[in-house]
Length: 290
Ligand SMILES: O=C(O)C(=O)Cc1ccccc1
Image (cartoon, rainbow, N blue to C red; front, top):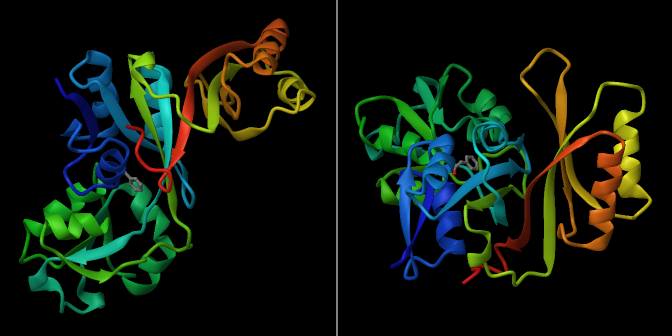
């Protein structure tokens, strides 16, 4: 039976494009789901085999909905990473394509997409209200279903094509080289092709208590072993102001002797470490895994 890939839908989202370019549509079934938590929970419950969700964007940074759901709501490994170039299009229903910019009332999209275009939107549509949706393609669908409303959406070219919308602008983001990092999650780590040059390990590090130099000690363990870190950020533990854990990505597989030693050393100073995944990394140019 074909493996089932859950992605943030409806059709035409960036997640859809990423999922289809990673998992060939002739070899996999692709299932659109309503929100990022829904994708992750569907993998957790087993209603899909794998899930593709955005985790970081080059312009707007982390997708905190993804990070928090992975950390707090489930215990599922990240099994791959995929870097995918994107560009934000401003799309309108054909009946609204001649509506002057100053008459546009609503701009709809996923909050990440709106944030990537903030300066552009403020300049071109200063009067318009921003309306956040679960995905860019959901916004495109609402605009497609509302031909009489002076609304526009921000999303992928694919969303315009699939919803028969006009593209008013095809690079609305405020900075060039817009790239999104997607991750694949699955209960089953070993169904995976490990055929990649680059491996990463994502760690959740909780310090024993807040004292001067605590994080410095953790970072020193990576530093003297010359382990390269590709990402570090703090997220609230949600137990009170000032309580944080750290999410650290190191570019070695977890079984590597250096990373093993590093984790042991960090645990020895009293930190709690959870491995969120150790996984191959792919980029759009290398393309599909299978
Ligand atoms: O809404 C989408 O199309 C997504 O896949 C989420 C997203 C939103 C903005 C940038 C990258 C991914």
